Length: 159
Image 1 (cartoon, rainbow, N blue to C red):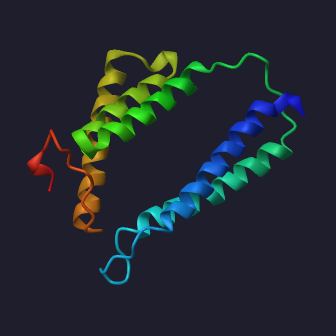
Image 2 (cartoon, helix red, strand yellow):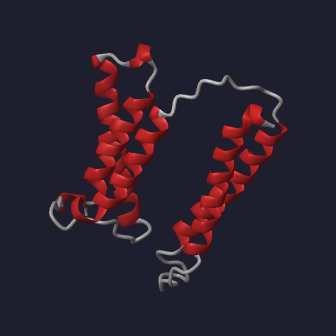
């Protein structure tokens, strides 16, 4: 049982967080656009989260693979800190700039050692800039959902 205890605990935390977010998303008020408004994406995403979390938890319980005793908590703790900073900076700075910074730092953190060249960092930078702008565009134009623009920093060309 202790061989995969950390893995089982992490899988259970992911599943429980998904359940909490699922019930939280159910409290979002229904929009008026074709019967589906701003509540549809959080409901779909949290449903997917719970289903995938349950599958990962079940597969983890059935796994016979043993993990080594040495666990590197540094990436996990950095990711946790980044997520908290992301949430707290979203309103004052806005979705696009915060997402750009988050994506770049997160991808750089988990990039393998052989993928830490100048060229690879340029690619990470391009992806980190393009993806949040694209996501913002899709939400604004197709879902008609305005993502946080930021109280202090506004980028007008994104809408």
